[in-house]
View 1 (cartoon, rainbow, N blue to C red):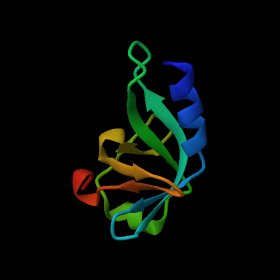
View 2: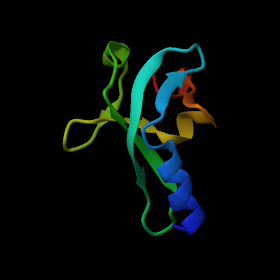
View 3: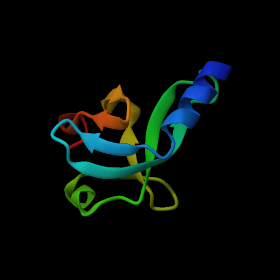
View 4: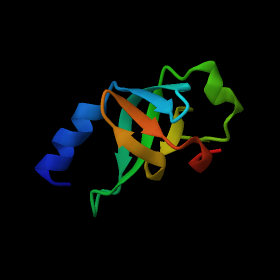
Length: 87
């Protein structure tokens, strides 16, 4: 993982995760990445909202909800995910 990637991942920690329709999922708690390539794989949700209960999301060993990084379509003030990519 390059220095830029580390800086980038620190910038999105704590951002609110929303769908394109504006439904709030929670906050970015941390990021799971492939250690060999540095490829970002999943976002670990912190403080998930009730909306996430209806979604078929993966969980980590601690029971945290995981959103595939491939579903992320934009990062700005919020992390926007394509809801259809994670349902």
